[in-house]
Length: 374
Image (tube, rainbow, N blue to C red):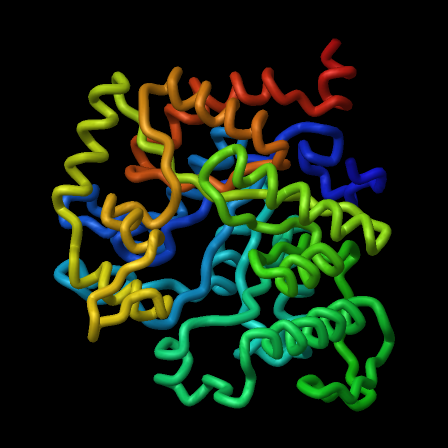
């Protein structure tokens, strides 16, 4: 048990509740590699509708990824995607309560530029801004624009990220910053305006060095694992590491929900998606991840799971069944929240808000809110 309090950000997890957010579909095709999936163009109009539905449902945050090259295939999966900073600034104007989490790459954005963009987003959103820090990427995605650092290996990318994050934080708080690191150089660097409250920081990290960066510097970590046992192990590790630094960290995971009129109907829908798997797009994704050896045809466990057509772990069933499964996962894992994906956002978000989220709030109450209501 980590004895240190979480940094408060007005989230349910501040007081023992669970944070439930939405991963926006900012690229065409969403999170299903199938010719049979619902139409999803990844447009601003679609994402605006999703953001408004998420806020109406009572979700705690919305988040966008940053993507520069898709996976192709018959569906041209993710070949078209929106810029996350511009998108989230626009969505912060049409929403009022939900936290706005954008994404930046430490390999791509200069920390002084990042600090300025996020301070601006914090103003535009009225203090709701959050930043998902991505420490690496896929070589082909960055090499296409001459931005892949051949001399920086996996662990060094985290060394770079340490300097980057500390530089951004300093620029948010200090009058000027001088830093001569291995990767970041700032000379009497100024950045105004300062955010009134530091933006919420989140990062994904599964390796030891990744967990250490995130547990020391961030407010939340996205964990790998699709079962309660896997997530519990990883969550405990992240919180133990954070305690070594005298702090606590929120632990999240990602999950796709397929909600049907019945369990059988939802399972039939999932099977329909799997039957339409876009093999070429799957190969493009695996090639980008470095998981596919085309010469000898080997696949790892990630590839085999992806043949379901889903790009994340999934929960499938009726609204009641999904409610129970999500609650049981949060209970077993001890994690602080979930970032959710839907196969059909426009159809499913109202169902989630009306039938699923209220039951989850009741099962995992915010202790302060519960005391006030009681």
